[in-house]
Image 1 (tube, rainbow, N blue to C red):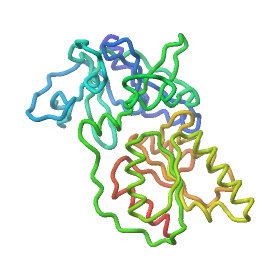
Image 2 (image 1 turned 135 degrees about the horizontal axis):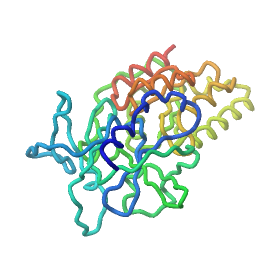
Image 3 (image 1 turned 45 degrees about the vertical axis):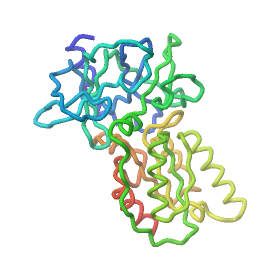
Length: 312
């Protein structure tokens, strides 16, 4: 893809709030010099261009090529191929760089080449368990192109955890709540589920979870049906629902839309917890009725957002 095409590729992306609740995902396709096709949610990508000069620094974490200055800000640059299995193959230094905004951090991702943007239904974005791949631990989902080729959507949270380590959760005071207060949360990232669980345990709240939006909606309907059978309200079992924005099979926007349109969940706040921190994503959350939006991953901010909703 030519440079001019790359510059035009992302025009208008941040204004696409019409995707809210449509259960469609826009994926930027790219290659890493292997036969495999990779993808990343286009909302994570701010710009695409040729790889600039990278300043090498000593003792950088594995996969971090160095630092660059981008409009007055110094950002780390990661070579994505270094995190993936590529048996005895030599790969050139990534000639293209994607600038990504992730969890309030700006990073450069080196790739071989950027292809195009595709729009797919989230229900066609599947969990990767059904595909045998040596890179499975770094793949959060897969989807299929019209020609039958598979696209591996990278788990950026896992890659960043591998490079920089997981965030250390400081001491979080417990919430002033009854011991039977419960939360339901949905997130497809193993790293995120582990950190969310740690925060909820410190708050002293019971919790159940799902690994994608479709599973979450099925389980929530089961909880609502069980509550009706026992003569209780869903709020007696769940005080709050925490959803990720992007999940296989059903995204957090559609999941929120479903929850908010079902009277059984009336009065239960929905908090969206997402690595997508742009204003467009906040606006998309408002469109479907999200009660609060928290960017990943700051444990204290997450706890401070959840605590008053749990205690009220």
